[in-house]
Length: 176
Image (cartoon, rainbow, N blue to C red):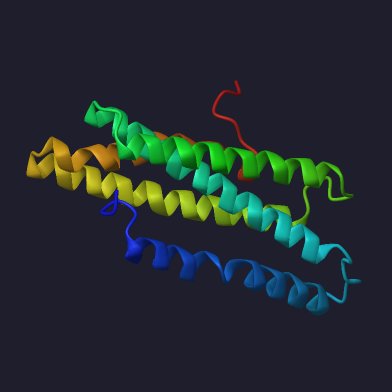
């Protein structure tokens, strides 16, 4: 487990994700001043709720990756237990964020929502691209043990990228 989610990964994740909310807030605030629009009094709340939803979603997806990775190993080990814990934790946080959102006046798709959808798509796309590359490195190396984690990430993040892209750009793969 330490090799999967070690200190370097956690530090990289924290350095990349923690400054995200203030950066998005400042960008949207600057954009409203630039366009000479009246300020949105609930902008901070929208950014914070969207930020927590982003974190909860990716914790849930990481839990799915670890659970599938544990299943591919063929045993109920630390990876599966950690994955199930992340799924439960991320799922509870995601549902709580949605419940808080319904109790506020933050309904509809705002600039904040569209921006965080794009950030979600960016993060999922980066993980999916890395999974594809790592998977084919494992294929060419001929070692099944090197392909399990990238395959699990690809199984989770591949469809998520397609769903997020269709939600972001408003297209459907199933339309006639």
